[in-house]
Image 1 (cartoon, rainbow, N blue to C red):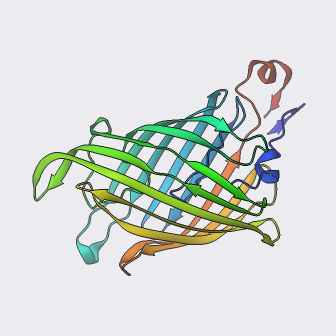
Image 2: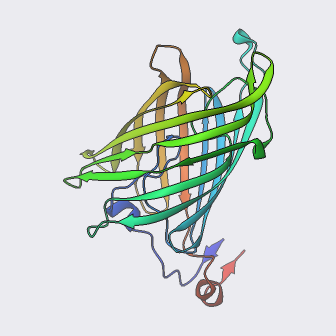
Image 3: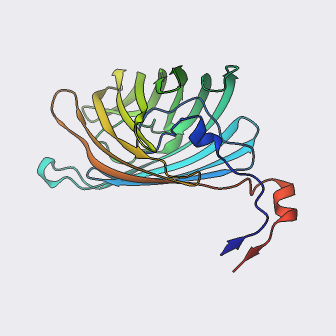
Length: 254
């Protein structure tokens, strides 16, 4: 498969030193250029995830995500899955284009929210979050992502009820220590009735070019309990193939 006359190159992803969520729960304020697509595949000890992201409008991304959690026989937890559909809108960016803010609004289990419940209907879960990105000397990037969620199908001692939660997530990425690589650490969790234990993830994200990014992480609960464990993920970025001028002026050969 070969693309001809590709005119849009997404170099700003690397030069801006901003990482997308991948298997990290936190995200930054950045939305991809209009017309582009992002595909994320992650697999690990606790679950596997696939996510597709399309920038349908300027500063707006449409996301579809699914997680499959593996069976845990030791704790008598069966296989289960969650689905999530959400939008992201970048509403502010600084003059240097290395910091800003965005807002998420989603239907389905909030990213990073982990319970041992079996699948519940997607439309019974709603969440929102506001990622804010703060740069330091164009080397260290701090993402803060407070949010909230409501679960209308919460299992409270075998009784279904409504539960609210305050979600929090913060991530620090350090560049220029390892070439083409970010050292990343984050903490996230949910407080309130819809509680999810605080967890951390640490890892490396290798960014060799503008199209493919690889990451390896390890995650666990802050109290020492089992968490996500070891995970490997890949992100694939596309050119602006959803724009009319790209479709008219480019040919795909099979």
